[in-house]
Length: 253
Length: 385
Image 1: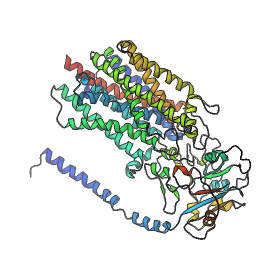
Image 2: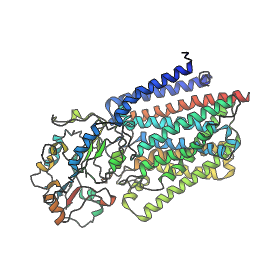
Image 3: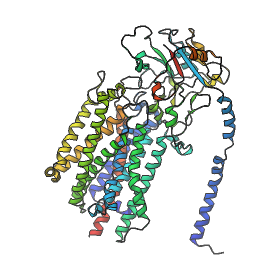
Image 4: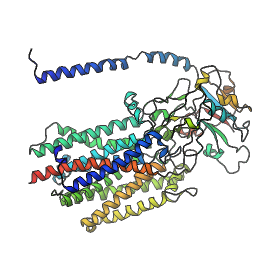
């Protein structure tokens, strides 16, 4: 058989394509996707939400913040430029700008804010790698290993709930909790509704830490939880509901 | 044709070495950013995009503006632009290269950049931006190179380039539209939430790009034997005059809507930009410089007596470029973050390393531009000789 240059290149090219075929098939016929979806069905019966009762919340108390930040290895960078935070307090008029009126005197204490775990999260929509995603039970999650640090989600979040690790966070963690991963520089993080604790049957750390019982957490699809009852019977407000994001943190103010 | 880039005058080598030094400086600081994190920049939790993304946005516009010479030449057979089409296309190549580099420089985890391909997410505008920018880069390299090499052989360009050229026209519009969508689709950012964002981007781009092209033509004419032609330059000047007028008009439309409606979440940003907010106003002097330069350039460009005098035209082009660089390459992105969604006014100032990295990337773009223009001009000289 006579092989000319053209023929050689043809065979060589097809050969190289052959090498690409296996990884391509692996991706397209991925088995682990099926596994993940069965898990998601279990979560589908849930819709998690939180109520913050500002009547009970004690001004100046940091129990929920400290509990969350120590459980999740959130660094204390100590300057507003590079700070990382999952749950914190904001001025009433900054949290609910649309509720502002100058005569409020009572109940204007700082409000506890965190990720709203929106029904229609803009951060998930804009993420170019699906590193942030929404679970069937409503939790908006972060994959710290997939995040490329483009910060599109930070621009998209209308609540300022997201932080980038502008520098290596590890030196700024007072006591590392070995149960939860620390993060590397250049990735975005935020509240995860204590997904790792829920998996063990525990309630979120902030809810557990609040002695005033100002934080309520539960499944809205379960008919007689406290959260469901409060939402049915009383008036609650949410942050910027007019944006259509469907925030799942409800406030009694 | 690449060999043309290797032989040049002392001035050419000098320019190349100078650019390489600036690139080297930028690269050094990029290595530091890589090991220390983005914390070495002035970006913060509140202003989470800074100089890198503003330069990216600005340069996408300059890249898209190649269409302003390609369209009249190829669709309307406007011969005067025939000589400078290649300059427009190669300018686009250099600009898109800078855009892509700025994106990489901005990533917190650049090593994971390929996750965008591994986990394609069509709901993300950034995914589409990656597609249109890379597509535009390839289109302009292929078109520019093929047409130039046919020109060198004095044969008409091969038939298969024509469809690519036609495709490159709407593609140019797409790159800047998609880039505008990055901003215009975010619910919580009143400053960017405007349907006019894409047309505004295109108008300012079609003024900036040709203004830079005219300046480059003046430089080429001065240092080489290639003359892009008076008619081409004069007609580009008209394009700039119209685009600049439309651009200023669009900004005034925004200002009317925002201030007459009085919506605080939209108004605060414009206040920060032009008069300062809560005692913070780092961008105020910049913005008024931009306004003055914009109106100065309009006077010089609309009046035919001043536009036709090339010395004055050069001044007008510099004014357009600087004015729109401030408006888009500084004000537009940063002000979207000030005040923050929580109403906090936290200002942004780029740090030294950040400025050095930015300059390094600009130098890289100009090195690509210098090499490509060297090749183009050498071939044009060869043909006319």
